[in-house]
Picture (cartoon, one colour):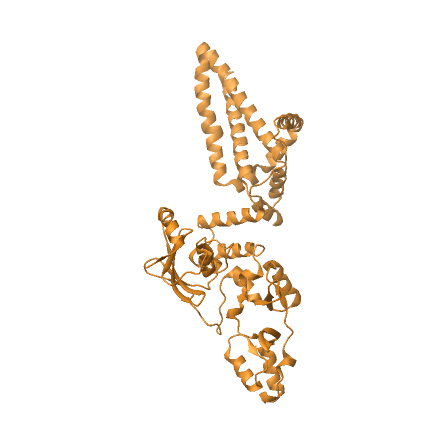
Length: 434
């Protein structure tokens, strides 16, 4: 009879271990992985997804089955040890069952499951669905009691996540990169794709001070030379004043016109071959601008502010570079905007976008109030600093190396310890020359 009791105790421990492993596996399983496997035809993944959609009932079944098995095993073991040792057998049963339950029914199965939660979830999915069906009536009673108690304590309500789905996805990518499972380049590409909805056209445009434009009233021969001397294929044309843009000249259209005129540039009228300009507001989200580019089947747009003044231009390449990083071809002029120094500092052109600097150096400088590095320094300093002034904020020391009129053209950026930043913040923000 004792051997039968011991056999039942062992079976109860095995059942308890099954429920413990199932709890860890199903709560730790990736819903994204299950969805992917389900699309590939894995039926067990469908079962796991169904179980995760019924979280309350699943948790109830797991805890109910686990506790029934543990209590049953402890009760039988107590009876056996009491028959052997009398009243003191209760203490022996408590000690032995505590060790057995903790090691074989909790720690061991949960450790196995946590090392491979997705695989374990697929393995236990069908047995757990059967257990939920068997325990269905009892689980309904438990759910009713739990919901009533939650209402009494004011805890009833929908589950609300702290972060948005986009932020959770970004956190998952950062975690995989930290664990070495995703390369930095892939992390940056995924991060850039997630940032498109948060960025405006003004964040990625080429400012008007850096635009290449041509006067449409130039003699045809000189205009052709100007077009051929640039590295761009689409060039805005202006008349009377640079702000009055009348069209966009495509290099291919110009070459066709030269061929049609049999090489006589004097016979070319650029106003007839230029495309009409397309103006877009600077506050338009980048994701919408990308859709507009695809819809209009064009790659070039001029950006205007709320007063209708031209602020810059944006191209499809500018948006794609936010995802894949800098795109260079054989005609691009390579400008080293970020130059790492042997002492650990970085020399940066003032016009370098903060996002590009963060991507290149894996930093986290804020870009909410300014687009470029120079703009960030001006925003923090609340003035246009002179050459030689330095400031410490956001964990970095910024020193102005060059200034041309009202523009900061070069800075040296050095990471500083947090303690040093706190000590130097006040005097540095005021500006110190040396």
